[in-house]
Image: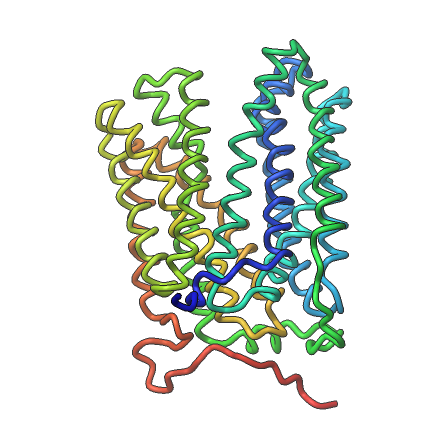
Length: 414
């Protein structure tokens, strides 16, 4: 009997538990957020600007806190307490939206929910990297993202069943989202065992310049490529709008959105595992190529079947990039600065999303949908050109010094 290759090692129990935590979290979240605009508009009479204000504040808050929490996670002995605080805050705040009587209360609760997300995300990704062998990091992040998308598939279906089958109102459905929230905390407490890190190798005092230099030039180049790509990665709402304009009904838009998450669930699991065998860069480049191709199809505006097919293929892009990008962050970053590295990565992706969607909308309004989708494809190509400078082994292509990513962190002596 042949000895199993390293690529088929069993995932650590903590990774499996964190996958279940993400499944229950997204199940709870997706019971609420697809219905939140309707709840605000019909129950509270809020206008579109209120919905935009709430979502803008919420997502910007989460993006900024991911950077802060990542830096802090490198300066504590254990990351799990940060996960408990972040998931706990979200699990409590999210269902209380069902009791809100006015939109300012929804804003406050949505803000609290996103604070929880910002506190937990970077330490969680760093913890996954901590407990996982380097040769199966892609598989670990692929499994985690697949479980996240599985929750996004089940959540809306559970909400629909409660609304239609049980005849509940929106507020009652939101309150019932507390049940998977309880499962989140129980799984996190019982299932996640974090290895002791001892005294954190990163000094407790903050020195942003030193930490940034410690991450190394390959990581800097990688982050620059991610920023350029993010600036062309607009909100998926524009894809759904294009589908609706082609004649897809509202009900079928919801169905396609659920099917899209099914594709993402399968693709992220497979893509992460394949990157452990074939390297990170080829899969990220392939994912960005799929993204650009889908945007070019949406720019061309074919018939409805063509757009639907492209939208399903769009889910493959996530599978080729989401887990692989995170595994590559862990590969490039020194262990002592892993939380900071994930914080920078999430901050770039999160904060870049706002100008990306704003620019996309302005270009669409001024020159039409083909120009907007074409811009997204062009920026994906530019990002790919930048990514070619960073090799999988953490060296910079074409650099005479051939600088490698940092593998250790040596703070200056006092």
